[in-house]
Amino acid sequence: MTRVLIVPAAGAGSRLGGDVPKILVPVAGRPMIEWLVDLYRPVAHAVVVIAHPSFSDRLRGPFEVVEQRERTGMLDAVLLAASAVARARPDEIWITWGDQIGVLPATVKRLASVMGEAPRPAAALPTVRKPDPYIHFDRDATGRLSGLRQRREGDAMPAVGEGDMGLFALSRDAYDRRLPDYAAGVRPGAGTGERNFVPFIPWLAARDTVATFPCTDERESIGINTPEELRFMEDWIATRSA
Image (cartoon, rainbow, N blue to C red; front, side, top):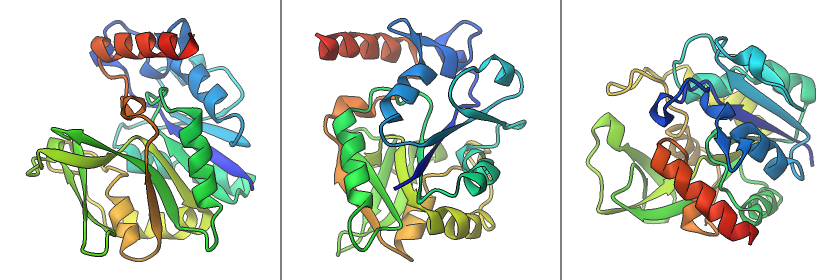
């Protein structure tokens, strides 16, 4: 089973303070991109990092860098890796946000196992239940993902919601065929002005099989967007190491 990991990482990291691009911000002494490369090394045969031209030349490592000149959203970032994916000809395409370094190896292993089930799903992802959610998946009476609510787009949110944790696996067909079909009809969000990737998941679930499973620990779903989240992740990493 061959996999390409796409890491959309064009963010400037302004909410973290300083002038270091987010993907290069050190966490417990190591840049975020190093944590991600090590975490996915056992399952990913190639890594493609989507970066803004303002810092793309500062990225060095065992990965390919593709530039996203305009920060138009995660959907466009994921699509920019299409040429690299075509060259690698993988069985699966995995996607993770550049600040999701807390994902546990057990969750990575479970995702690989779920994608290896027969028949193989078009997509799979771990989910997390949280109060006051930022993202929430709706489900229909059969349990299938049927919609997505986003706080940043002004949607009404439940008190407790089920959201993604910035990690997704797609079959080759889902990436090559389904994702471009979806993207052809997507306009920028009214609240953000960006084209988000996550709404693709319930769209795909209406047309093909999308498998979900609970994350190993809800703390692994925390992305690093603020100094407080950075300190939390460093403390948790230290606890895990001990």
